[in-house]
Image 1 (cartoon, rainbow, N blue to C red):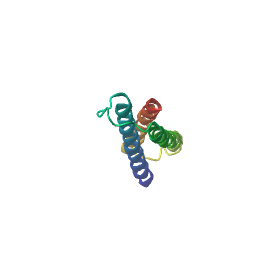
Image 2 (spheres, helix red, strand yellow; image 1 turned 180 degrees about the vertical axis):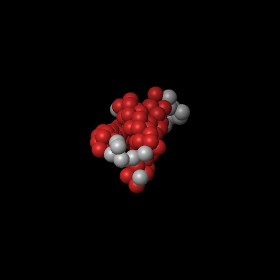
Image 3 (cartoon, helix red, strand yellow; image 1 turned 90 degrees about the vertical axis):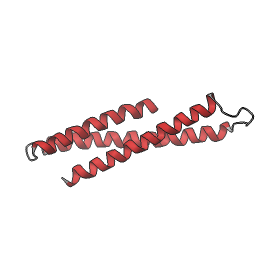
Image 4 (cartoon, rainbow, N blue to C red; image 1 turned 30 degrees about the horizontal axis):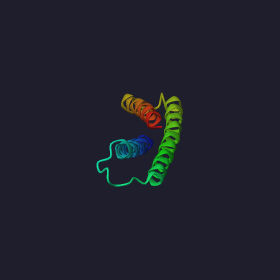
Length: 109
C-alpha cells in the first residue's frame, strides 16, 4: 500500500513537471513566432538556453517514466496473487498513467 501511494505521488509530480515543460515550450514558441511587441529585440541565445534546459528536464522525466514503467511491471508480476482487486486496479491505472505521460514526454521532445 505504501509503495502504491509513493508511486502515485511521484507519477503525479512527473505529470506536473511535464505540464510545466509544455507550458514553457508554448511560451517560447509564442515569443519567437508571434511576438507581442515588435519593437523589443529578442535574445535568441537566452531563448535557446531556456529551450535546452527545458529539454534536459523533459529527458530526465522520460528516463524516470521508463524506470517507473519497469518498476510497475515488476511489482505487478511479483505481487499479483498477494494484493486485492482494488490494489491491482490501482497498479494498472498507474501503468496507464505512465504510458500516457511517456507519450506526452515524447511529444514534447
